[in-house]
Length: 197
Image 1 (cartoon, rainbow, N blue to C red):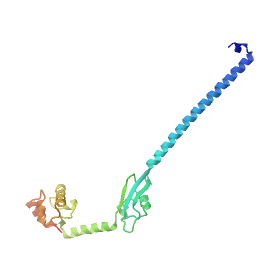
Image 2 (tube, rainbow, N blue to C red):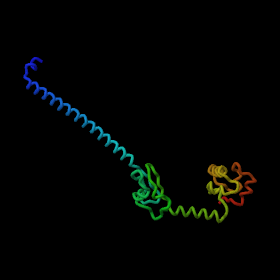
Image 3 (cartoon, one colour):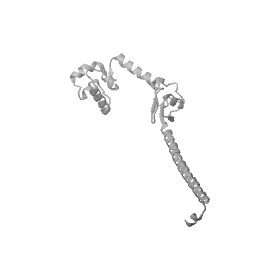
């Protein structure tokens, strides 16, 4: 302090100016480094967020049936079923192209099965045979076909299917009376409309 007091006015001003410049320089360096650290952290967060978004966009889809290369394929979330078919090599000659919606948007773990035109035609033939004979095969009919019989509803149709699954096929049409809920009176109503072969 004594030394400072002994300095001339000009020297005091010089020291004061130098001190201010030094303080300003140090402050500027400190805030510059601090802002640089903040920007770096923000950039790291932004990159991490972008990577997470990219991961969310990646999906796996399983496509099988009548395509040339069935399997699991990587796509982007929201891609259409058409792209999955392309990745699987396209349709085979037997593919029923109407069995899937090519415009459908895909999501992770979707399962796509392209049906065969042969299976469709065999199903049509089965229905034609049932309609032509006017008889329902109680050994092969599904729930909806059984419900076309008089007084056979959902629960009774399910009991018929459960019975044959448990006990094997009916040998005679009269065996249907073994199903709970089907007595002699109901049998009389349906006996001319059913068969076992």
